[in-house]
Structure formats: C-alpha cells, structure tokens
Length: 377
Image 1 (cartoon, rainbow, N blue to C red):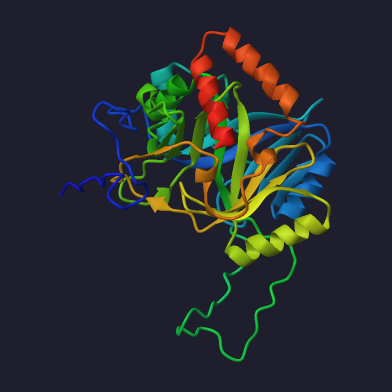
Image 2: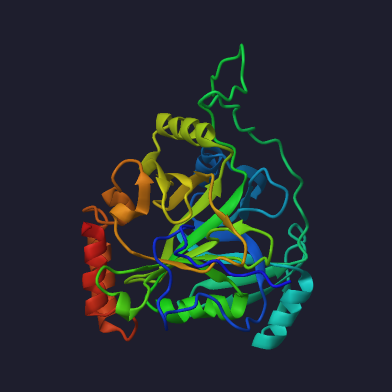
C-alpha cells in the first residue's frame, strides 16, 4: 500500500505549499538515508569552563580528560557534544548517524572515501566528508550505545476539567534542565542551494519547510528546515536547518528537555548563575517547539527546546516568507542578539558581508537586501 504525501498547505504546518517548478525538497535517489544527528564537535581553549556551563545547561559528562570532553543527554545512544582543546573557540563539525554500519560502508564506496574506525570509547566506524560550505561532516555507524540515565518526568497538569493532580502541589526546583538529547543544528552557508542539495542527495534528508526572503520567492528559498527520512517512523521536524548568509558557520544547536517547566526552571538556574539569555521563552512556528536560547561563555548560541513537531516522510515542504516576526507564534520580540545585529556583532557581520559580495557565491547584492529586510521585519 502506497502512502499519499500530504501537501504543505493543507492546514498542516504552513499556509503555503510549493508552486509548480519550485524545489521539491527531496532527492529522487540519495546515496543513503541517515537516521539522526549524532553529535557536534568543538574546539575550546578552556575545557573546565566549558564543562561548568555544560553542567549548568543540563548536559551530563560521559568522559572528561585534558584531551577531550564528551557530553551526553539522558537518552540512551551516543554523545551530544565532543569538545577538544584549541587555541580559540570554533565549531569543527557535525556527525550524523547512519541507519546501520553497512550504510557507512556503502556511502564510503560511492564517494570514494576511506572508512575510519572511531575511538574505542565510541566504537563503530565513520566516513569523513565535507559539505559544499566547507563544514566537516562525519557519517557514523556501529556505535557503542551509552545507557539511559534518569531524566526529569513531565509534570502532571490539571487542564480545564481534566484533573490529573489532586491534593498535591507543583514546586519545580530551579535546577539544571536535564538535557535528553541533541535535536538539531543550524548552519549558515554562502552556497545555500548547492549545500542543501548535497545533504538531500548524499544523506537522504528531506525538507519540512522552506523560507524565502520577502519579495524574492521567484529566486528560490533561502532557508530550509530539514529532517531525516525514516519512512513511516516520525522524525524531528528539523535535524538540520540551513540558511543563506554571508559566512559559512555554525548558528546554533538545540537540546531537548522534558517539558515547559524543565525549560523555564532550568533557564532561571542559568540566569541565577550569570549566563546570558539571548531570546526566549516562546514557541516557534516552523517546528512548533517551545524554545529558550542562551549564550555559552565562548559566545556560541544553544537552545533548550521541548514539544517539537514530528513528521513521517509523507509530509511535503511548506513555504513561508522569512521574517523576524515570523520566527515565533508567541514570546518576547526576537532579540538583536539572536539576529546578530547588536553593536558587538556588527563589525564581524559587516566584514562577512563585504567578503561574501566579493566572492563568487549565492550571496549577491539582491540577497543582501533581502537579508536586511528579514532583520527589520
């Protein structure tokens, strides 16, 4: 029996679906289909400081020594983050988990890349790739599975006449929100379309939602929320989000917690310890998740989220204009810090824009005007 695909505009997740001839949001014959995101990798000059923030943010420590800090969530599986010492802080790559080890071998054969054994602590094998933006991408399989850890249970809520809690109060502690897992990473690219197609053709990912710059839909999308194709099994609305911009870089990553109380109380814990909230609390439109964004001590943006959308592979992409006010259903106005338009960020952004306009890529003057409209919308 063939399952019918759901159009993006049928009151499902976007007001608009694709027009004739627009990007289909999936490859007809991908090399493999990855199952999920595995972990992110960073270099940081101070692993002690990085670990202190990670613990306050709610991540667990799988292992720690002067050469490497491995951070995890409470879910069984693989680590969320691998942090190594470096002279300066930088994002060094992302790993995606193949459906099985055979897919790693198949991919390596098709792209003519060697299969590399991973360290014994992780187990399994990897093939090392580079996307068109220059981002390092590992595809891994056959990993040792970390055991499940105790997590925060969602609170029982009395809603309307539905009473689940009687003769009991709610007193969530201001404590770190226990991160369950890594949910997604957001990247920016000067070669957005080529990079998007690479992830669809190489890793078999599919688009949940496209955004386009105001007034520029005829030039194609400029952001995509991309999920793993697990067939009939639902996957996160986006495991990877990719946006056109003046630099090839990490934007943020997101970590799931149990519920709104965990997210909010965990945020109070971070605030009490002097960490900087970038934007939140609110609920997104694309993906629907409740969100709360924070800066780590090195300035990297990280997100607590809960209650995100889950789609199987029958859902077609939605299309919507890319606007600042369209990033949330409710919550405080999007902050200048989140958009990268503060005086602190301005010099770097200006240098990136000038450099991108000089190079041959997809970020031209028209796209720059569109991006500026997004920030002011």
